[in-house]
Amino acid sequence: MPESPMSISHERRYADRLEEFAARRPFLVDLALTLALMGCATLGSALTLPSADPPDQDKTGVALMGVACLALLKHRTHPRTTVAVTAVCTVVAVAQGYLLTPLLLAPIMAALYWLAALTDRRTTRAYGITTMVAVMLAAVFSDSMDHLSLLLRTIGPFFWLLLPLAAGKMTQLRRAYLSSVQARAEHAERTREEEARLRVTEERMRIARELHDVVAHHLALANAQAGTAAHLALDNPPQTKKILTDLTGTTSSALRELKATLGLLRQNDDPGSAPLEPAPGLARLPELVSACESAGLKITVTTEGEPQSLSPGVDLTAFRIVQEALTNVTKHAAAEAAHVRLEYSGSRLMITVSNDGPAGPTTPAAFEAAQRRGFGVMGMRERARSIGGDLCAGHRPEGGFEVSTALPLHPHAPDHEGNSPGA
Image (cartoon, rainbow, N blue to C red; front, side):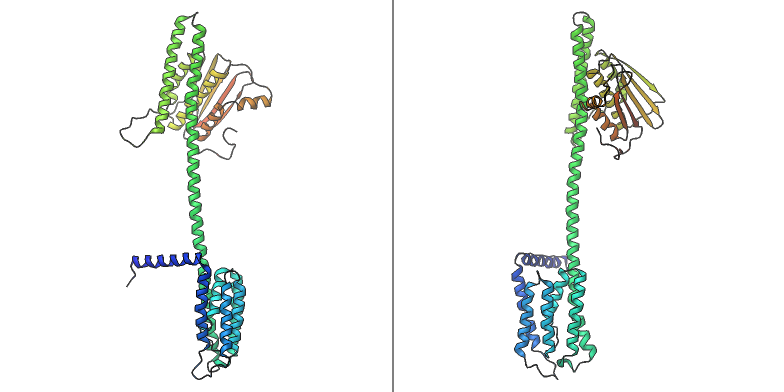
């Protein structure tokens, strides 16, 4: 009849409690086991075959078994010494005429078990074989076993001593397996925590890029529009009124995009929540150009090749790169015109944003310093690489600044073999 799951759980519970007690009080457990083995060995020293005479040295056998059992108290720290002492005591007792029984072999069997459980395979093999050979030779030449055949005198000790060696090695393998399972569980837990931290960091970087693109662009554009309006306030009131009207639209657009970005962070699974606005794309490029032109910057847009539909990720990335590039022109470049070129070539979209500003730095150190200013170029490069594209930015030899990027029409994982983003 199969055991019920409840009885198995009770057995496991008792085994776990026993292991916990053995871990907390190892000396008490060893002492109780030593006393039990001493009783078995003492009883075994008094046994004889029906047709054999009992040995004359009864006290000698008890003393030898007592020494062997006391040696077992050091099995945790000195398993090899324990095996050697118990083996010598057992061989001497058998040689003096004591009958070789499992009760007499109890100390040496316990020592061999702990040797196999606590040491490596090579040590177990060396000490185990030596002990088995010594005990079998003592049994062969013992007077107490003359009435038995040579096969029985050798095969009995062989199997009785082989049993604890196999059991000890199985215990060692079980402990190693449990240790490896625990190590894998800890590694998996650590990996999950690291992956969660990495996802949080990536999300924070994405949100930071999005907020930078939204806030920096509109604030820079609003600043330029306000400056232009202040400059033309007295000389050209109609133009000033138009710029201020555009300024109102710029701030409204900034608030709208900022609200959409923050709404994405607050979004929950409530079906009644307000729908979010779609992410901007190249379809809003005319609106972007119009807003920049109201700040006094003349922008021309050219498209080469057959326009193709873009995935949402590529569409958003292309728009944000053009937006950031035009924002940098408005904020930093002493330029009056900028040119945006979109080229659909094969499976890639080439975007180039250039301006006609003055010549840039001529020395490598000055160029690197200009590249390190701000996070605009770094953010554009990270956006491009996030979908498998590439971006280059720098001063043109004929003057002005140029940002060029190649984006795949079908985004894929970025290539991590190159330099890190922003390098």
